[in-house]
Length: 252
Image (cartoon, rainbow, N blue to C red; front, side):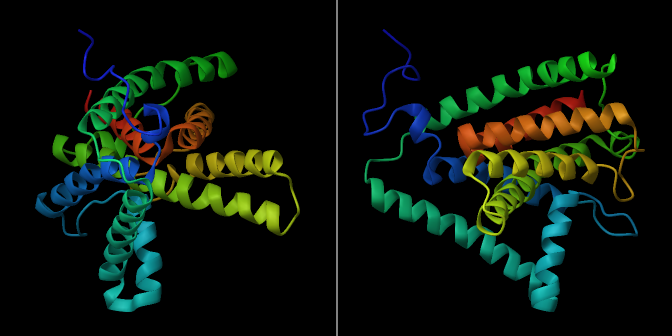
């Protein structure tokens, strides 16, 4: 008897289509948000305040600039409320019940992609530069294990939200609407610019890496791969792939 995970999904769409919908993608990412926020709340804070993922801080600062002291609440309402609205809209539009085995398949897929990710991107970087680049930054590597776990979860969630969902989409729309680029050219420019900014982001702030060509190229290639994965497999699987890879890198 075949495994339940391998049986066809009785729905208008295959697993590959279903797992990319807002319902599955956003609900699959929800545990990342919950685990990250719980760890950020309970971990000890140093005199400068709690450590949080840099992309999370950047997004929150934008909301604080708009909402003042209520910026944090506004950020949470937009993030959770917007996600639930998209999930509800998807459920109403598609109708068929939510199936747990789809989430199980997504978890397995993300785990396998995370295992393969470092080897593939590392091999490409090694081929280009003659070295295997990219480890955790010294500042992050020196943190306690629980803090490194929290930072890894936040990277998967907030870096994908900022650099893939928001930034790549915004650059693509700018190229198409303002400069009249076609879909392929606009997408290519968006991916390359987004990947460059994603790589550069890792060298900013108190816990950033010292700038080195090898690690910069590694992260540039990683940004391109994550963008391609996001376009092909959606936000949920990309966020978990990124988080699981970072967990392996920062806690291994």
